[in-house]
Structure formats: structure tokens, C-alpha cells
Image 1 (cartoon, rainbow, N blue to C red):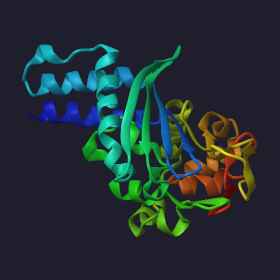
Image 2 (cartoon, helix red, strand yellow):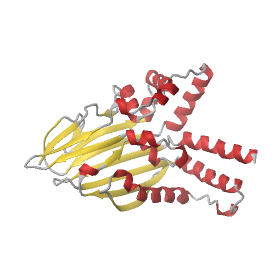
Image 3 (cartoon, helix red, strand yellow):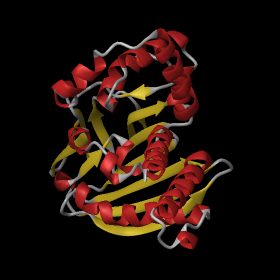
Length: 284
């Protein structure tokens, strides 16, 4: 029994670290009447897929139940994530409907592209933190953090329509418990070990969120604009790790949310982080 528990706990720890090996790209398309679609492309590194497959099989073996059912094909893990993606529409708002989902594969990553529709963007909620897409065991997810990372939208229709994007405030993204954890000191050896782990497991992580307007933009305070597409967030962790001073700061502060991460890496070239809050766009 002790060996079984040790195996499961060890694998869970590994799985949690591997959740950094993910790329999440969210595109919100907004029509002139306030309806639209959300396109999410989520890719997992081959290392994460393999580890989660092994985790599933080991846990099945440890329970001594249907040992032969622990398949090792990549498709099992990806298919589970695709099913989860179809079921998560309730998290995005009561008006969101599932449209389609297709598998996606690159040379080093596997995942899916899902499409959802909404009739009224006022009811839409988008979690800027990809924690609910990582394949992390449900019991290990920090649901309170997920709620605090929501992007909210306000749409006013008119001859010139206005879309307002409200991003999470810093005061909403960290609890007293989180702050207490941040203040805990580590030995130099522990810090060096943690830094090495971060570089290995999070180097391929990327998070991107765009809003695309179906119409002509009259004015906007968005910092990053390409014609009718506004980039709210584009963080590639590999670029962060190339900057030793910044990486050391991240390793020391251990940010718990995307908002905390924004404040630390906002001046790094190559990243696009919208600091205006709210973001307002007028269009017709």
C-alpha cells in the first residue's frame, strides 16, 4: 500500500510540473451585433502527453483494476482533453455553444482546436490563465485562481458600437495564503534546483489572447493592434528564460497568476502585454 501511494504521489508531482509544457492560443471574433465565436488552439508537448499516459497506466496498475486497459497511445490523452474542452462551455458563460473540435499536430506537440459560438458577448467569460487546459488532475487545480483570472466583456450596440474588455485587477489575483507562500525562503540549493526545473518544463509554454473585430475600428486604446485584431496577451516563456536577470526575479517571486506575471515581464521586448485596463474599442 505504501509503495502504491508513493508511486501515485510521485507521478502527480511530475504531472504538475509538466503542465508548463502547453501552448494556448485564444481568438475571440466579435460581430457588429455582439455575437461571435471563440477559437481555442491548445497544444501539449510530447513530453507531457507521454507522462500523462504513463501516469494513467501506473495508477491503473496500482489499483490492480483492469491492468491491460492502460493504453499508451497519444490519442487517449488528447481525446480526453478534447472531451473536456467540449464540456467546459459552462465555464465560459450561459450563452456559449459548442461548435466543433479537431485534433492538431506539429513536430513536437499535439492538441486540438475548438470553436464555440456566443450570441451576446456580454455573457462571455474567458480565463486568461491556461490552468484549466493543462491536463492537470482535477483535484490539483486551483479553482479560486481560475475564477480570478477571467476577462469580462461589455458591449453597447449603436451607430458606432463600443466593446469594453475588463481584465483582472491585481488585487483580485492573489490571496493572503498565496502571499504567505511567496514569502517562504528557500536555500540556495533549493532555488537553483527550482530554477533548473522551470527552465526544463516551462520553456515551451506560451499564452496568447486576441480579439478580432468584424468591422471598421474607429478608435481604441489597445496597445497592440494589427488592422482589426487586438492582442491582449502574448507571452512566450522561452524568451523570458533567455533573460537571466528577469528569470532570476521570476524564480524568486514565484508569480501565481498571469496578472502577477504581467507586472514582472511587462518591459521585456518580444512580449505583448496589454496594460490598459479596461481596453475599449469603438467600431462600426
